[in-house]
Length: 387
Image (tube, rainbow, N blue to C red; front, side, top):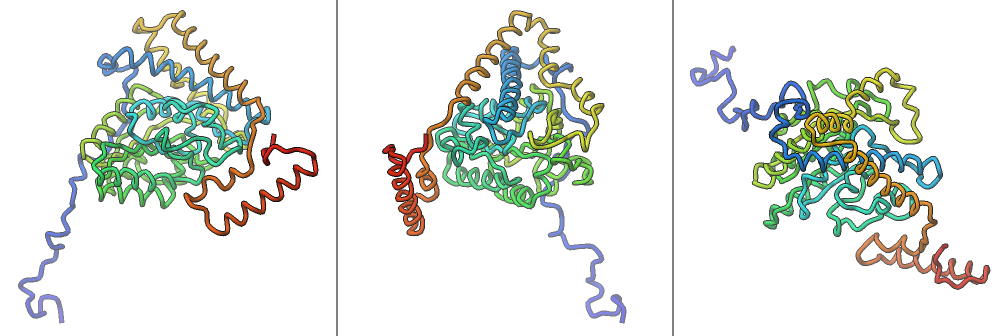
């Protein structure tokens, strides 16, 4: 018996019912075919010169911060440092577009974004030094803990943003992740929940070309990472990640859209990791010097300096002032990081639970006894603090 012979065949429809129709028109969600740029285009004329100068000062400071932190690893003062050299435009813009009440959700590579948001540079590096759990109070600074597991901060950002919306708080969460993190399940779950709930969250993907040694082409066949937004029902934006003014503009629009109830946005910033993945990585094993040198011609600091110089907004005196301020920051960071910290082993139990469990109390008592015995043996009475 064929379909045409079945009872009720006259009502048979060869196409899906109307309920199948797309919930959202995909066309407005699609990113531009090329990364959006401002510097070197007519669009730069609409940018506030004071903003350009501030972006430049922060870029210079950020470049020096990365160099100093990298040097600290070689001196044994940091256990590891994932440099964001070459990605400073993304880091700075992400910090500057947020209001004080907003939240930043960084990855392990985003210490510069935290510093640009106002966090003490030493506190930003404390986790990478191995001294304390986070190194700073997330509630005080509205900066979530630096996240080492890939992409796990993204669902957290969605949860906070959704909770803030339910409470009526005017808060936006900006979550940062690398291109490697987009291959994690947490990335997809976060985008899906954010779009369904219309949570006020912005996802910033820093596409720096490699997930450690894995190039992007071995992770995805999508036209761009920004295109992934469409499948979840949110707009995707593609921006030149080394153009600080462009990243600032695109993120500002996404933050405003989220704050006004428009829902989430996925922003892909195309940039490049100039240094190795971390100080423990040998990048020469998977990329050539010619590739790195090609990207040096598109350096975010130089792009901004060329624009400002061409427009007569930056002279030698202004450039030297920015570099001198950055050097003072680096000198202070170097001096403070070279001092041995005073740590109390009992802090291990301080930030685990609001109220300690019976097992933690037992472990804390045991450690306290062991520290007291060690102090008595060595003739010290400092309450257990290791100097």
